[in-house]
Amino acid sequence: MKIAIVGTGYVGLVTGSCFAEMGTDVTCIDTNTDKIEGLKKGVIPIFEPGLDEIVARNIAAGRLHFTTSLAECINDVEVLFIAVGTPPQEDGSSDLQHVLAVAKNIGQHIEKYLLVVNKSTVPVGTAQKVRQTIVAELAARNKNIEFDLASNPEFLKEGDAVNDFMRPDRVVVGVDSERAKNLITQLYNPFMFVNFRILFMDIPSAEMTKYAANAMLATRVSFMNDIANLCDLLGANVNMVRQGIGSDSRIGSKFLYAGCGYGGSCFPKDVKALIQTAKEKKYNMQILSAVEAINFEQKKVVFNKLHQHFNGSLHGKTIAIWGLAFKPQTDDIREATSLTIIQLLLDAGCKINAYDFAAIQEVKHIFGDKINYTDNMLEATQNADALLLITEWKEFRMPNWEQIKNQMNTHVVVDGRNIYNRDQLTEMGFTYYGIGQ
Ligand code: NAD
Image 1 (cartoon, rainbow, N blue to C red):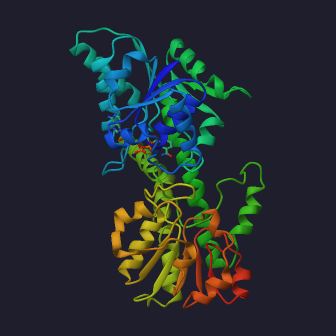
Image 2: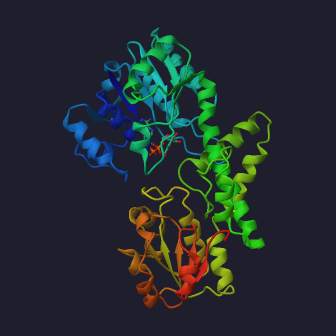
């Protein structure tokens, strides 16, 4: 089968290369000329483990192509995915301009039947708007060409995206025609060898499922952070509480870690968009408003602990930061907690030594030379008055504490992800702060 993917970002590039890996002929389309020219030469624009390998293999096999022109390939394919960005607008609602621009482009160039599958995260009712946009363009051309729409929200996690796409827990698909259902089944069949995990439903339910999933995950994070903050005040340990409740099969142990807040390109914007969708229907999503408010405050918790430790006198202190990406295994810093903390430290007059395995270039675009970037984790702690762990990359798990202690000025560690052992660090002479411990 021949397909096209419009939007070659985290979702589009992973989707395209994974379908190609299963034998499908895929053309990835993007308006960003530099990105497409780079990809043609095998330059991967994002850090995503395993992706470079499958992109290279499928380019070499002649199954993965890149272009900036939708018109060039639309009539060669049976299925076209939309995987462009849907960033938040000022009021939190989802900005659909890129999705609708693609719909317009489809309507202007389609000459034969096409299944249009929306993979971008979009509010309920967007498929309807895509349909209307295509129909309006066809009417302007005086054409009557059959097409179907489907909604196939994506659940991959950055940092483990290839694995998630290759072995999905489930594939959610909203359809309203048998033809669309059959095409989607054919396309995803190679991923379903062990058991069939496509959940077909109506289109609005599929659109809603994506928001409900992210809202639920964000809720678990904010709930545990709220519990952790209370543990701090009461002298309980959230790590124990997590194990105590996670072993209840009704609750489950995943996504129960307290920390310094969630970030990324999805949770913050999807929670906001769902609140806004509800508002448009005059419904108040009280839980999600609280989830967002808790997360806003939680991003400051590491700074607040540091501030309290130094009795508010942070001016002139040198602070080491380990981890800048919004989570490990990615270079994505959209809405990352590190950005909030860096700004608070700069406002307080601190000097910052920051290290991250993948995200330094991205942070440089925001803070430039206002902070010092180091080539490795140890260099960041040189003459530091405190060390802040913000993103739990694996290389931070078992550092050489002896060496770190010898080169720090004062021995304070604020562990924003609860990965260190308080007793061990205290015994070594560090002052340790975790979250909810
Ligand atoms: P991204 O910003 O990484 O990529 C979007 C790409 O679309 C960009 O390369 C941009 O140049 C391109 N684009 C914009 N308008 C275009 C047009 N008219 N024609 C062709 N290309 C165009 O975004 P992303 O992170 O891949 O997210 C895409 C969608 O998937 C969003 O709705 C997002 O919410 C959703 N999603 C993202 C993730 C994730 O982890 N990143 C996971 C699940 C779902």
